[in-house]
Image 1 (cartoon, rainbow, N blue to C red):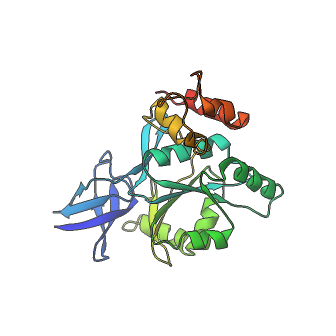
Image 2: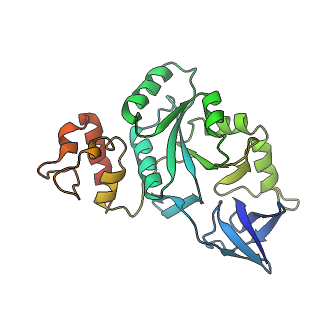
Image 3: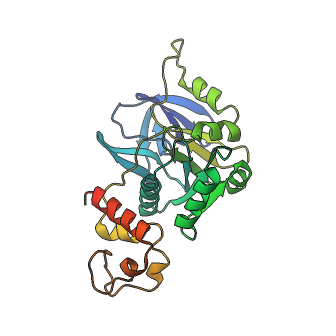
Length: 272
């Protein structure tokens, strides 16, 4: 019997690294539920998943999708082109906080026109709420925490470029992981875990169009929405205030109107 972690997922196979560093492929059922980051027990060629500390999960038209598990930080990769929607950032932050995962924002493509203005708008919306990392040097310093990170972002936000800068052989490594026998046709169906040169781990995830959190109550959405933290230091009249029409709601009275409208939009979009 061995213990290890899942580093990559290939549909009917996973790549598992045991605690001594040895890597092996293990066949699994297509609907096994295993994801990258899972801690597993390996016995007689079979995997038993150990309890997850958390999971990054989103709602899709095909059902709930778990991108990875047992995370410390989620880096939300954003750019001016294609411009990352604010609602995407807010939804990822809410999903992270619901799972006790620390989100932060990574601004890419700084050489494009409008990038500085875009970064400034992010500072205005998220200052004091989540950390904003701008530039490769700041990002490398942030990653020096020897923790487990995952990058998420809309397609085209620059996530692949970042991965190649941080882990130069990441693309080649993914290709090597994908090959099986002589076919070379297998491709990763989801996330891939890499070891960072400075220590810690970084999980690359596929680009997505949206990120709707799952199974959240109205109270949770109100509690986790970025930007309401300072307002909540002075409690509303009612402890379970949803910041709608309740009398004595200080959030509704004091919040930036644009951000408050965004809260209402997200709250309405998440079926609870």
